[in-house]
Image (cartoon, rainbow, N blue to C red; front, side):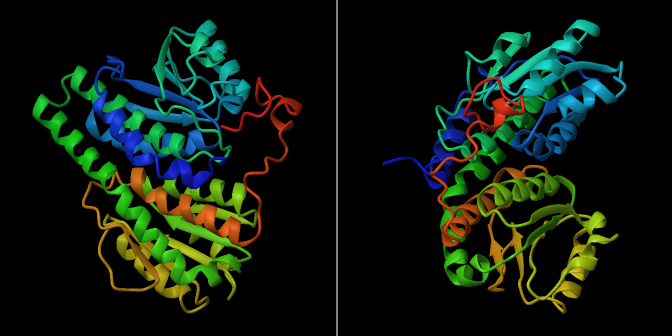
Length: 356
């Protein structure tokens, strides 16, 4: 039987647990404590945004994330950047490869390539290669590789912090324990999401439009929700930061619009609550995803007690499952690959058939 998105979602727990087991051996000790530049496209950008705030919370390092084509051709390079990390699950994204090669030629930077393929062009181009240890993911709509990218980047930040003595061994172990707690919650999150979908599947499948709204580290989750829903459900979908939504996009809300609020205990929670209450007056299809407990049937509770900066690692899992189930409910044949010549035709991939 051919694998599906759900095949790899069910493998996420074991895959992430293995990555944690291999720490710190598989993670480079980065000594640069100034500015890191992360180059990525597609889901890799979303994963980078999801990991950024955790990395920055551990040391003095500052992380900038950029789309490689735009950065290479239009941005002015920041001379404070000492480390460039290029992320591509396939290792064959041409814009990432070209930008990385150009930066290596023009500036005194150390380059790191993160990919699931040791024989990829990215692995050959970067000074240091970091394996995205996921085995094979043969479905184009990446799920297991996505969460593995987040965790691997987080662990790079953790080892860096220990290397530069920003944290001690006790704090490092505490962080590892919390990450393990997050990873071990995934099977229960899958079960909870299945129940949530069973309750609301008719309303979700009938939706002509989806929007997810969040803030802080959860922004990466919103971005990946939009990517996955657009790829699979194939109706207009957006993931948007709360303040951005409140300054214009809220005008488009109508009674048929489905909204997901990412309700995270944080500085912006009161404003998100007020916004959600307002939108409930204009559409009945308002749902919430939160790490805390709730009796509200429209709320998907993950029941995890981990820091806000770690939450993107698990908050994306429900959206991966919902993307698959809603797409199937709409009759989209996800195993049937489409536009397989797209990457080569528009020169975004070095090999045909690569999605990530």
